Amino acid sequence: MISLDEAVTARLESHGARFEVLVDPDAALAIKRGEFEGELEDVIAAEDVFEDASRGDRPAESDLEKVFETTDPMAIIPEVIKRGEIQITAEQRREMQEQKRKQLVQKIARNAVNPQMDNAPHPPDRIESALEQAGFQVDPMEPVESQVDDALDALRPVIPIRFDEVTIAVHVPADYAGSTQAKVRNYGDLEREEWQNDGSWVGVVTFPAGMQNDFYDMVNDMTSGEAETRIIKDEDDISTR
Image (tube, rainbow, N blue to C red; front, side):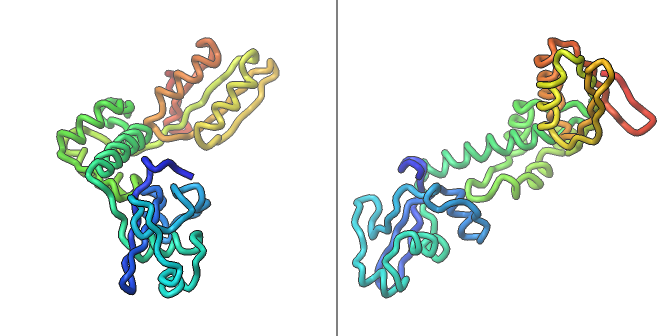
């Protein structure tokens, strides 16, 4: 379950009665769209249906039977969300908008590069500042993924930016190979790998280009700076970092 502070109210008025449930806002939108795949009990604040959630008043069982043909709250809650409206306060809207803005900035920063600066990643602060300069307004009621393209369209007149991937070859000395190769695998798609006769490990991994600096920091931390990395631009052109 979630806390009351995290929940919004979904409200349905039908047959002269009102029904309210308390649910996570993102989960409520996913349920409305038929895209929710989690466990309902994990995204609600109460396994109950209310007439007025703020007062804790409950509707009559006869009203539940009339509208939903059941009194089971776990069967009714999704129906209230699907058929009703999601109610949010101005403060909840501000908090949701701020949370979505941070998620959007992080998603763009992990995937975007500056094509005018040899495809260097854009720092999150630069993206955030550019979004503000562009006047882009994050919709707190829409998933972050569905807002990325519009955000990029807004950013392009302000900063040079594009989504890209990078392929990096890394050579890890034997003393660090075991732990480091596991971390490298988690960064993206491992294109190929080879264990050397001296116990060292070579891997080639592809991942969003905006994660380059994080990747280099991780490899350096794991190997005390002894690993070698190369950006693979194509089969014949390999440049050493």
